[in-house]
Image (cartoon, one colour):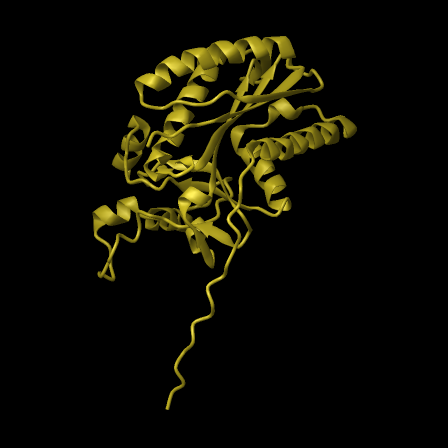
Length: 291
């Protein structure tokens, strides 16, 4: 006789009560530490030389060190293909689901349940081409192709799966007032448009989480989601003024697209001026998904 297999007990984790203020403190500490390290080694390039991929990697490392599960490029829990960029990607045979830069869970062994794949009561062993296009199989196929510089971790492969509404969804955006273009440092000609579109486009993506929001006895129970905007400018006054104007413009556009956001938590710290930027501003802008 064969002994009946016994499945191990399902891991139990405490639901995390996310504090965006606490997360911002950790993000700020990571950037300040990196700035001090660059000064100590007298680096030619400063903190404002980071690109978005390097910035995301830096923040992911810091948040993992704090004991959180951190997953990059995680698909949103929706099968919608709203943006023209995603539609063009689908035409090229790439994954068509929009992805979030950083998704946090209460622990490193806790992933995020994918509500799109497999479909409910799925019985077939092989998905249809349409299901493959919307599933994480697309991301697995991407791993078979030559790897890129992005360090991605499959949040759906972890032993414990948190529902997406219990994760923290962060879009990370980097904007420079002064930048290095074609090897030369100078004013960023696209600064104003990049700042406004950063606030508008990523907030719109986060608003798709509204399908997970519910009204409870205590009010709106919605996923924690926010845009983390890292802004490099001449000084703090410039950052404060430009961010206020950009958010005002973004709010007008966001309302037209069905996405709104709350007042940002903004912090500043000085950086060594190498190309014109002497201030780093971190603005965490929480989204308010519609129910």
